[in-house]
Length: 249
Length: 249
Image (cartoon, rainbow over the protein chains, first blue to last red):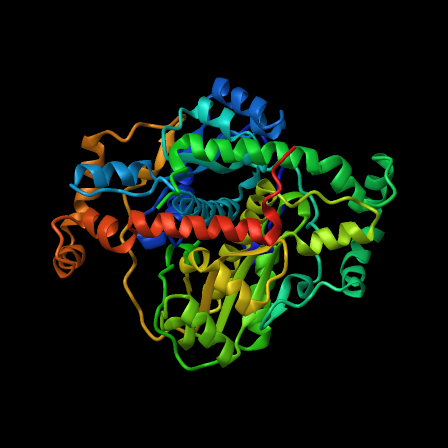
């Protein structure tokens, strides 16, 4: 499908709003994704207000596209609505646990990818914000997310003001395994990663960061053990604080 | 996009294999999805072998579509490959924590939804298996998943042998929130869920299960607190056992 194979993340947006009819179509596309037991245990918060977008920009490590894009969509694992429905219908909901959180996160992420593709189909550009899980606590405050709601990803959406090339990917055989998992032996790792490491783009990236290898840019600069552990603790605390911590039988 | 709006889960498949060229195209579509820092921290295990599919069928609560569909795709959060690359490049990877697991799970789920849509675009049918997280430990054994690899969802894929109607969804305003989260007040819950509860399909469903309300079918039969907590513990143990439990700073 052309839309899938043409995807590139857009980080520069035009100062042009999105028509409500288009936005609604995109959001509706999200609701057509598969959802566990047709429970639809996710929510999408649509933020256009400048003051709120500024707060989200701050939370998302001040990435300018959050301010530039006309619409910010925060996708949340959400068992709040379903639980309230159960309570109104003489049923005893038990969705205050980790499995339910993860189930709801899957729902939210499948919906997000439908929204991303439908947006691109309408000539819009999107970019996912990985900072959503890092800063979930802050985002919960900004968007007033209640119990049993946790943000898991964010899409900024708008009309592209850049036309970047397709991003490189590892060869298919690096990510696809035949029947069972095929061990990642060193020769294969070399075959898969060497073409990427040889690219001018990545070679400058290594130099700019004063590192010896591309891998070191990831481990020492972009995604460090220290940050990962810090944000792991923060995210686990958020999951518990939002009411998904009841795992005792 | 027509493919998105035509999606229905398929649970009956024809006894007809999928051409390798089609299968590869579908898998390649998965790799075009956004991935955190272009790390591609996911893997797709393609299982066609009858004996292995039988084992997976057993793990997935004996849902017959696992045996019937020619191809079973297990999507895994995977920091094994990336970590091995770092180790071969004088870098010290720190991806043995919960945030990294969740980041990799996001990658895997966005790829899965691309695969699902591309499959449907080629006339194939798909169904997600929520049992993947319930039975992750068993699936790890069957597919020989190494450290830093955890299955997060599964798609069965094949040519449809049924043509089910579109599944009902809540009205858009139930899942979409304007600027910040809109509280789920009882009147709204009633408005959103009553049309569903009035459907003949769901009314028979309630009767067959000997329950008073549809919500009770969910809480007492389909997704019980007891099961959710049991599988929460199991899944958390799997995440730790696979090497994602190092959250101490």
